[in-house]
Each structure stands twice: as structure tokens, then as C-alpha cells.
Length: 403
Image (cartoon, rainbow, N blue to C red; front, side):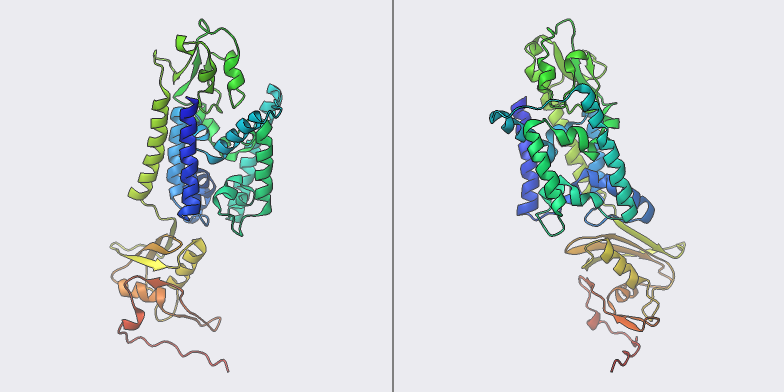
């Protein structure tokens, strides 16, 4: 079981590293905790925090479903920080470094810190409208390609976790991870759990000693502790596991003993399903409405360059809300999927007052702000549309004389 889990951990870690450093992908859009951070802003303002996308919501949903079924299996099989921390602890044991163990009471007290940290992170993020935790996030230090937006604090936190992991098993995952605080309430009601048969168990305590989350498995008939990652280290360690002293399966028992292969299949199905759903049912990460919707509407689908984040989407809205000769009369709604290269944008409008050409002109034509006495050139380009080739009788206001 241990080697199988390590192979799965290695596979997911390799996938992340290849995506970040070889494919130059934006892995922040596939972080489930990003869905937690962005939820309030999207629900209230209709847009995502910069660098995130609605794919974060799909992955969050997939991980929550996984947790409801398998407890915190995401932490034990998928999370790169958990994998690295666990491997570092194994390295520390090989180097014969002294293993630091804390008392059960201390462990429980420290476990509350992740809830405090979650509240702080979410409050600061929602107040600032930015990913405040990114500057301290050890995971972002791993997936951020070490760009200029990574603060030295992220490396300090990462360094502390590395050193602590050599002598303490999973210190960040057990005590400080804010995403663990999100998963724990769901994990407590999970379908599956480790069960111990007290009639067969010899009370050797081997299961508790091997538990990476320091759960006293030897004192529980059913491990309903929320932080269990279903890693099955306790089952591996039990000398009587074949006799049924300890097993993993449905919480109600049903006389079933499920295999690790079934667990891995569910993990892969939840993640693959969430990823596929994000493509099959794309949700715009930026939504703005102007005016009152008429009885009948039309829509134009556009591919626009330089709409790479929420800030650029706001600039796009600025051009659409212009009040000069290229003004869009009446109602319109903007739905955008910002992208570093070319973004998909859908503009819904009142066909009785505007058309697709009106929309394209508003996006690409220079905008003269009469109040500020200032010309703003549009940075946006639309695939398949050339403003210079368009025959129009519209006449721009004269450029102000700046001599």
C-alpha cells in the first residue's frame, strides 16, 4: 500500500512540476483552495481574483466530493506540499535525525491554528480583493516559477516547513494548512473510515505509531477523526491486518473491506471529472451587466487579445461603457474568460439598438473622454476583425491641440 501511494504522490507531483516549468501553465487556476478564496468576490462582484479562474470552483467541488467519500485523501495522495513534507520526514529518519513528538493535548491545541489562519486569510483576501496569502504560501513558492511576485516570506515559510518536516511528521498539514480547515468539517461525515476489530487486535500500538497525522488509532474502534487522510499506513503496520484486526471501508461496516485500488480510482475519478466539467460547462470568470435586459437579446462571441486578468476585463468594460459616438445604446452584458494570450468574450446586447459591429467598434476604437479631455487608445484586438477595413461614416472628434 505504501509504495502504491508513493507512486500516486509522485505522479501528481510530477504533473504539477511539468505543468509549471515545462508547459508554463498557470497552475493557480487548478488550486482548489483558490476556489475558497475567490468565492465571496465572485458571488458579490461577478469576477475572479487575478490569476484564478472558475476552474478553481470545479476543482474545489471535486475535492469536497472526494473528501465526503474518502476523508482527506486529497492531502494524503494529491497535495504536493503534503507529499514533499512526508518525503522530507522519511529523509530525516534515514539521516537518523531525532523524531520530535508532541503530546496529544499540544497536538490538539496546535491543530486549532489552521482555523485561525483560514479566517485571517479569507478576511484579508475578501477585504483587499487580492490573493493576500500568496505572499506567504509555500505552495505558490513551488508553482509560481520563482517570479518577481513571490516574496521572500514565501521562501521563509517554505524553509521552516522543510526543516520542521525533517523531524516532525507533516507539521504544516496537521497544524497550519488553511485548506485542511476547509476539508475537516466535510471529512468528519465521510462515507469511509478505518475500523479496528477489538476482538482480533493485539493492542501492539503499531498502527498509532505509523499514523502520519498522529491519530491514536489503537484506542479507537472507528477512526472518525476528520484529519485522517486514508493513507492506510496503520493497516500496513498492523501485524494482524490479514486477520481483520484493522480495515478500511464504509462507515456503517456492511461487512465490507475495501481496497486501496478502489480509493485511488475514486480520487482519479473526482479530479478527472472536475477537470472535464470545467471544459464542458465553462463558467465566465468575469460578468458585468449594463442597463435593463429587453424582451429579446442577441449575443456575439469574440476572441479578444490582452484581456489577461480582472483588471484588463475592467478596462474592456470601460470601453464598452463609453459615452461618445461609439456608445452602445441600451442594454449589454459582458461575460469573459480572461486568458494570458487570447480571451473568450461573450457580449449580449439589445438587437433593436445595436449589432455585432457596434460592439466591435466600441471595443477597438479610441475613446475620447470629454470630461478629462483625454484620448485613450484601445489596447484590444479582436480575432478576424480589422477596424481599418470597416467602412463607416462615423467621424471622430478632433484630437485636442496639445501645442
